[in-house]
Image (cartoon, rainbow, N blue to C red; front, side, top):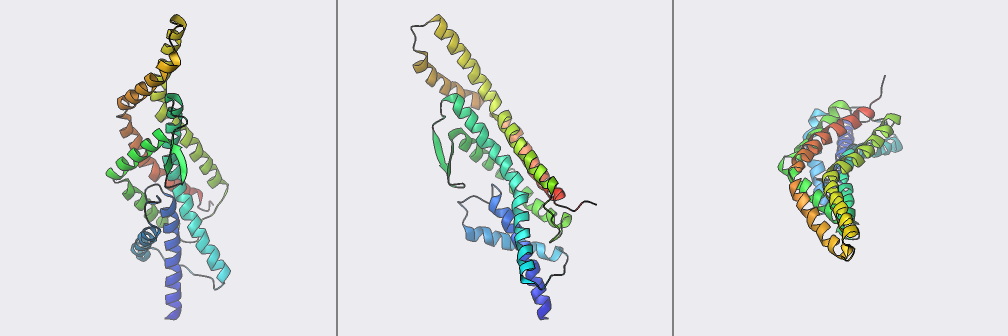
Length: 258
């Protein structure tokens, strides 16, 4: 009876640490506004629900091997959530590009999640996307992905190999591509405004284009963001489906290939 209890406890700990690692880094559950106790409690509740569906495995009696297994599961959860984190970070990149074009390059706000300064428009894009993501039940997608991970990759079978590193590099590439695509419509309109101001500066040299151009670029930037607002639904759809796909691809890269 004692052996079964120890085995059950170790199995629960492995499940808990994978869920906890996932909760700590994903954009929805990993924000600093959510207390640490709430994250641990949510991970524990999710682990209790998952526990009956995870098959039993044999454990070594060596303490160091057990500690390494728990750390491995914790890193597995972080690795799974990292792709989603990069996907949402592309919005900060898009905001940084737009800020530089609108004249807000030196205006930053404090992000309480990362405890760093983030671009003004990037923070706007990020918060808006999080709200729309939650409205579309995106957090259910993240929870279903962590549940699916135990079917695809049982406890203790994760392998950190070269394919996983390549997958992380691809996620970085996608982050830059998505950020540029989000910022491109607004940046293009502001570029045409700069072109028009340049023509005015050549034809009317008496006009101080710098003093006139800065408020015009800010106004045009806000108007263009309102014009391209319907694009956000396309972004949400890409993030909604992309989050689940990136988690599954990461899991496949951590599986042992024959």
